[in-house]
Image (cartoon, rainbow over all chains, first blue to last red):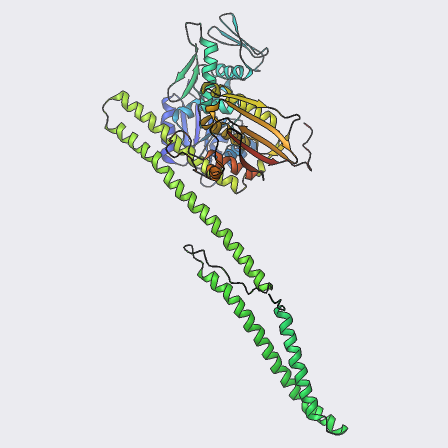
Length: 227
Length: 347
């Protein structure tokens, strides 16, 4: 299903590349090249998501974001930035954005985050009030218990958090960086495959002994939980 | 060595002596006159005295000005001769320890510091340029091969490798940036209170499966009491993870890696100890340098920036990174000052 996305990005090459990619995914994209226009469009129109470049001519991205939030516009915002240091990422997140993506990024990474944000925005039921099911997998967030095919799975606390995050993004690609940020709350870029090892441990507990695997590797992008 | 009097005292004494001599000359000239004549003579001699005083002032002023100019000239000359190419010039000292010498010493110390900083900067730029050459050339040859090949499967593989290499390059550049930001003490506005023990335990848990896969046992040794630290939690997480990754990369031959949190006086200690080959004392400086990789033949994942970043993050917290012998193995620790005078807010 297509969504309305506002893209505020001054670099024409990046903007057209992103607009093209997102349009191919079925979204309708409005593109503006500076902060003033971006702020105007964002407060006037109705959008499901705003993709906002941090460094813009005239009015920079964080100022736009603060003005938006001050104007009670609650549309989820994904910030794009060439500022990659841990401090910059924290700054970006603390300024009221919903996610922060460092340039250069792969389109797969951007898409995964866009989809996660759109989904998070739609369905915001109380996370604890009902069970999550993916195929024959059943997750009870209240009891933090997991069953597959009626059999209880014995997961460590972190493995449970990983699985719950995957389940909340069922059918959507989740990248390694997203996992590190969302499940561990770290914002640096590890130089090892530390996240993959956790995912393969979870996969062993989840899929071993079952015919149909649930946790899939998406080449060049990340992982996906899908029945 | 003879202790010489400071310049100002010497000049004052000289001036006093001259003034005394000129008074004697005037008095000597008039002493045989009568009282009435004396008054006349005094009146007559006033302009002479004034003239003499003027002369004396001029002479003394001239001497002082000459002397100041002579001492300042040395400093100016050195400042003139300092160029980016030659930082070796220093101001000569007179040895008297007067104000000019102190100024010269300060100028020399400043030149030493600038020289050291420039040396470090040059070394960094050189090694950055040097160490980026091989990943860039790998990237280039992968892209070239992808353009040449007609096999679609091979092309995709090569393109994936190109992207991976580009990501690795970005990671290097981000780390270099992170190091200079930490060294410039940027990021202090994001300091907050947090529990060091919890952070180290969480990171140990995060790396434990990876350690197991690599045949090492990673364990956490908690301190007796919780240790609250005022600092940048995310950056310290990165520093600790760098130490753990370093131990996994070079120290897993011996099997056991211990992450330890403790307190020594007014300092929090976060240590990672491995049972690997360790680093001989004379190579420890090299190990913490940016791009300092002891075994240059290894072209694996690390760019040799991990410890340099950990050290700069320690500096950001006014602490330091210490490398020691774990007998056998390597012990790397972050020593971070606790701010005991400011109690953490009750959680």
